[in-house]
Image (tube, rainbow, N blue to C red):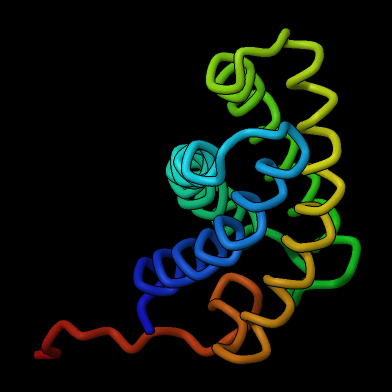
Length: 150
C-alpha cells in the first residue's frame, strides 16, 4: 500500500470510530439532541481528519530521518501527544460555538475527550500497524518503485 493510501485509510478508519463514540457521549454530557451532537461529532471529525493527515505526513517525514527504526512505546506516546495537543487547539473554539458554552467549558469538556482519544490514538495506531504493517518510515516494507527501469 502506498504511503498516501495508508495515511488516508488510517485517518478514515480512525474517524469512523471516533464519530461512533463521540456523538452519543456529547449528547449525554450536554443534554443535547443526538442529531445535534452527531452533527458536531462529524464536524469535529472532519477537522480531525485533515489534522490527522497533515500530522501523520509530518510525523512520518520526521520519523524517516531518525537513526532508530520502529515504533517504540515512547515514539507512540510522542505521536499521540503531538496529535492530540494540536487537535485541542483546533477543536475548543468549534465546540464552544456549537454547544453555546464558554471557551473554558469547551476546554474542560475537551480534556475529557482528550483523555479518551489519547488512549484511543495509541491503541488504534498499534492495532492498525498490526493489521496493515508498519509504514516504510518505521522500518516496514518499502513501496516498490513503479517507474520503468532502462
